[in-house]
Image (cartoon, rainbow, N blue to C red; front, side):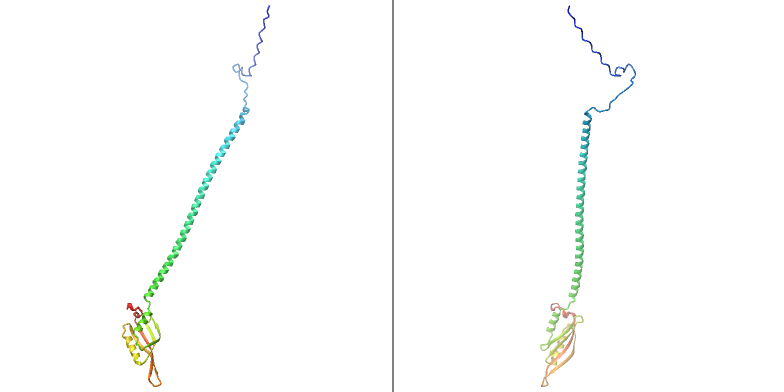
Length: 220
């Protein structure tokens, strides 16, 4: 008769984990939890955190560096502006001081001109005086020297003539002028020749005139 093979033996069931089948059968008497990260996953997390931290530090560095550079440029620009303004103020101050000096010099110059104009207005023109004397002198009279004072308007003149008549005529001619206030002979002398005749006379005249005698003839 044929041999009937035996069916293979059934594997014995694996024992259930401790406590896994007993959850509904009875109270839980223990619990075990592992806090260790899965192998390999922890290193990736640490690298990711390191990258993020490096990126944050880099961004902060860039922001801080840019802000510092901007603030530094602003401060430098303001310092340059302040220095330029200080230079302008210094130049303007120097210009003001120079203007004050020029104004003082101008005031002094104007004062001097005013004084000079006043003196010129009161100035006595001696050339006009000589023109006056020349036009009021007799032909035979010659002046040798003179000393004058325009303040007192008095002139002393040493002169010579051929005779005493020349002296008299000279005095009369000067007195006829409205510019003469007084004429006097302070001294006189004669030169006598070997034959006893008068060869000439010398005399000194004191003439007092009005101030207009020193003005130009065109203004008289």
